[in-house]
Length: 440
Image 1 (cartoon, helix red, strand yellow):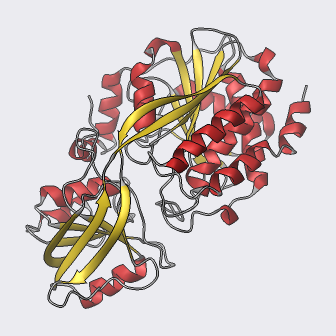
Image 2 (spheres, rainbow, N blue to C red; image 1 turned 30 degrees about the vertical axis):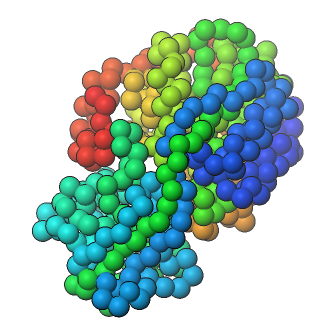
């Protein structure tokens, strides 16, 4: 039967849920907006036909934005000026630091070998093509910390006067060591041209209260111990709608839940939906879920994060051959392109499971170039997305889940030592050890 395809392609359930999410004031981890988003998602799962829809709460380190600035140390005048010129990075400490301003360009590892003691360092959000791996913001931040820098300035590489956000801090020390701010590409270029060698002050004012987050969960299919997890994250940074990252992913799994409810008799094992909280501040919700999970009971994780913006699904399968084969089968069955990759992606909510050897996908939308594009900026808004893409991707992902839920499906786990060795081979281990993300 193919009726479900037409019903999914004409359904408004996912898109309407996306509208509800982006119309909240913000969905910052631990905020009232995130809580409302979790409740909306729980209710959307139930409306789709899933059972046992609820919110599993947990405590987190909260962070609430105040003012921030980059100023001339001598005059006190702001040197980061204009619309949205300077924003604090979440989990930056509330602090003020002054030092000589140094532009480290891309902030690749060798750039931090200079004497940076007491200096205000600026790096780009980009990674040059000459480097064979993406260097994450947090790695750059902790390289600056280890080099003795006084403050950290993160400059966007995307045009449009858009300062980037993104958290600092580690699981053990959620609030970072030095004040950190994001500035736009244009502001960064002006600082590099006019203020290299000047004494600048970076100031961040914020609050760090205790807070509560949660995971919205629900189930479909038979009540088996072995199960699949279909996941997304509900939270978003507080400066934009979080439409792509990750309203889109959450809306997509709501649509998948609705489609699977109509195909429930085809499921040979339970499908557990999880819309995680507090992803943007350290994968907190998914880490709690992974730690509580029976490793042998989770057949696979299908995590959807930052899709819909690109029409073609990007499926990173982390070199689990059976997951790669399943994606290829779905692509062939629908004669629809799916882009795949085998390298490890140690970010987003699949990772707490994958690092334990549990098979897992990172599902996103294929885009050109490196980096997040509009993501983590004020421009991550609904107008960038198309309902057609959400519906097409929900159809493909529904079929993928049914395929993985087949009684005869065999998806071998990977040894954690093998995962660690692959991270070493891919050049990712060094940065993860620096940021406190190395758990092997």
